[in-house]
Amino acid sequence: MKKIFYLALSLSILFASCHSPESPQATNVTAVPVTISTVISNSQHVLSLSGKVESTNSATISTRMMGYVEQVLVDVGDNVKKGQLLVRINSAELTAKKAQVDAMIAETSAALKSAQKDVDRFTRLHDQKSATDKEYEQVMLQFESIKAKNEAAIQMRNEVEAMQQFTSIKAPYDGQITQKITHVGDLANPGMPLLMMEQQGALSIVTMIPEKNRMSVKEGTKALIEIISTHQTFETEIENVSLSSTNSGGQYIAKLSIPAAFSKSVFPGMYSIITLNNAETAEAGLFVPTKCIIQKDQLAGVYVYSNHKAYLRWLKIGEEKEEYTEVLTGVKVNDTIILSSEAPLLNGSIVQIK
Image (cartoon, rainbow, N blue to C red; front, side, top):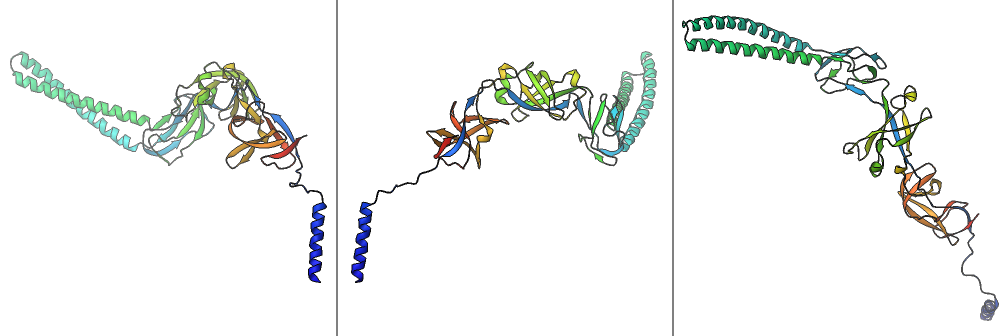
């Protein structure tokens, strides 16, 4: 009885399958709504740089002497005059050496006076034929020897006095103390910074020119400056550009002047945005909206729209701006790129333009 039941069930299933309509092989995929844009070419893209306000004349105050700091006579913010005493370093050793040299000078000066008298006397005796040539020559040699020792002692005193100048550090020009590095009791070493000072009023903006833009940037290139902290803007021009980037990380140092009207409202250390608006600095480039770039590990890409599908393209990124990013490779002009989508996309996803 069971065999007859199973056979009837199998036949009914086979009959139903032969007479039912054909089922689809793949499930229909709903298109993802997206917004699109195009890759643009900006032939008027100007060069934008960052810079910092610096004092044209700034000095690092240091010494050539080793010794303990006895006095620091200024503080940060103090205005100083040229030649004003700033720091005094202990110079007991130099004082003792100078005393020794002074004693040598006194001794050789006395011996020189005595030798001069001998020269005068033997000159008269030699003229009178009362002293031999040998005796006269010996007296002259003695005189020259003592004279040389006296001169050496005098030069030693000059050396000591020159070294003593480095124990009394004075201001090289009128300016303001901007940093105090040393304190009383510190050990000063040769070349070690003690103070920083800047000359008031003489300011400029310093920036770095990339190697690829060096040929198009020159003295007199016009620029628009925005001081970030104060939101001041003014026009100026490049004063000079360095000829070498050997010691500046492959970039060229450029200085821009600050108009007199703004010199009292900006201060050293303020950051600025520099826009070079000379036509010679214009660059041609491809740009895509920054918000549509997809970041994955170290890679960057965008989805390109083609035939109702989204295809992922990996990019080589250039200069990044707030709204647009330069693309070096990966897309071309007028490619249609996907700005946003209502659902996550995959490579090859079916999309529909909103």
